[in-house]
Image (tube, rainbow, N blue to C red; front, top):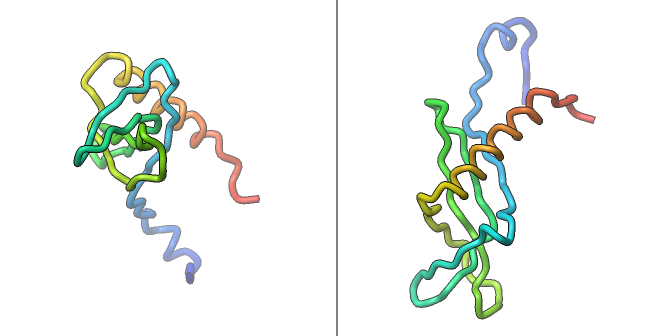
Length: 103
């Protein structure tokens, strides 16, 4: 990677994605199935969209055990997961705002 002095500073940095992973508290986890296999959803991947809204997908593990595939699921349209997503996005913005750079 080459950064060339003032020319790089004059151009805005293009950020292609902002995403966070959030553990779903046990009390809020839910089950869903795909291709005949039942999963317990315990992780959210939350992305910041270009328009400032967020999108989320849920991930988990097969209830029967094993590794299972990396399969995404819709987040249910219920107040509890929506509140978790909102709180996680807000917390992530606080953490990013106070980052201390590379070590």
